[in-house]
Length: 377
Image (cartoon, rainbow, N blue to C red; front, side, top):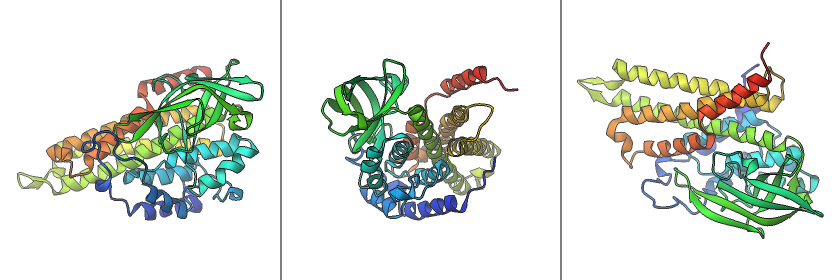
């Protein structure tokens, strides 16, 4: 296992830093100041800039205008995006396009991939199930009727659902298999209701009522949903890491300047110990993230399936990002709640990431099941 990044991966991260350098976190719409959704759509100007920098096609093959890179490169870019709270569907669209490329049919690839890589089409994924607690693939049923598939069910909290041109919806069949349906926005038999995240972004509750799709719009390859689910989870861990790193840096800058009794509070032992604990959280989040991304990218065998590494990364990310922002709020005092200061925005985004990842106890249970099934020698 080698965590040294390749030149291409480093170039992607450098390009991302250049693009996101122009994003001001204190200008990101605040959920504390905006009733309902903070904005009607994502940051389209930034999306266009990402497309011009070829950062929307990182995972796509060269025949689709992509760079042919891997999950590690995507996570490096996502890490940079979270540091500035970039309001773009970068994770969802990139992961969905990668799944279509890896498992989809030729017609779907030809229709979607090149346009997605150029930013002309936005993809998203319905990954939270009916309630946000049940498996996403169990929330929708899929049955074949002649040459079409018929879908019924509900998916909640679909990110960017009101903006995405196509939503990838996992669904289970009568034989216990999982398929991925490519559902266009506004498709007959679908109803999209408005929901809101803790960060103030618009989410969608997607209802499918006997929605019919042609066979070409359904991916029924084995392992497609599991691979996409792991990639989404790992990308969310990358977002949590980038956000946490930026928050700890903000905390260090503040405590280094804020004085009490004639000394910067950063010199107080109680403050230094709390900051050190959060630094350890971030390093653990980073190590487990790259382990998971490496397993997904390389397909390398291990004592456990890649899902085990993803579960470990999710455990650290879900708890770590919460601890980092809570400590930051505590060490900032009342200043951390000032709506003219960006920390409260990071707190709201961190809560959304934590909820998206799910509770650490659930991932610990998953890890336990994997260990029981694959006992370590």
